[in-house]
Amino acid sequence: MGGLGFYGVLAAVLIGAFRVSHQMRTAGAMQKQREGRLRKLSDHARQLARETLKLTRLKATEQERRSAVAAEIEAQKRILRELRLKAAPLVVFDERKVMGDRLWRVAIERVPPGGGPVPWRSFLVWASSSDRALAKLRARYAQPERFLFGEPEERLQMPPSA
Image 1 (cartoon, one colour):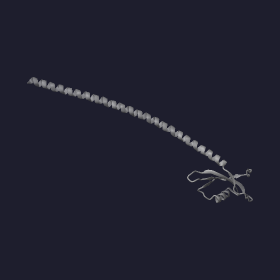
Image 2 (tube, rainbow, N blue to C red):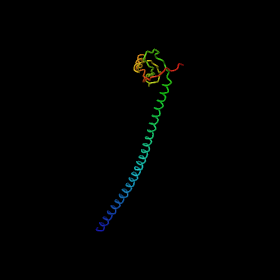
Image 3 (spheres, rainbow, N blue to C red):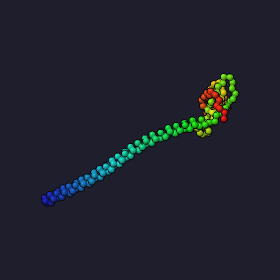
Image 4 (tube, helix red, strand yellow):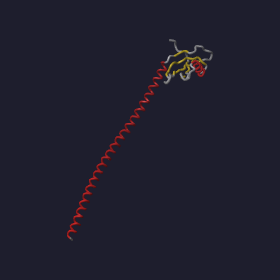
């Protein structure tokens, strides 16, 4: 009976050792699996960081390009506006001249409903001052929501007739 006890203890120790060994192998395999997942997640995070950096740089470049294009559009609009203003018909508004009157050129822009101002006509007006020239035109074109008046510009002489 004493031998059976020894062999029983020995069998119990061996079974316990086998179980511990099995658990250690399983834990090692799980650890390697976790390390593999962690490596994959780390690689994925690095890849996302590279893509994010690339997209951030691309966004900055596109914003610079958009700003440059917007500035170019504004410059072209200004040039077009100046060309339209120069091409606007010149109309003699008032041929009556009183002693002391000077000749003023006033540009008027039309404002179509739902749109921006468009150069329309330039008027030649005889008046004693720029304010008086504007007053004469405002009396004739009294709808401020439809017309914008430019700054009066003094002319030294009448333009040649066509």
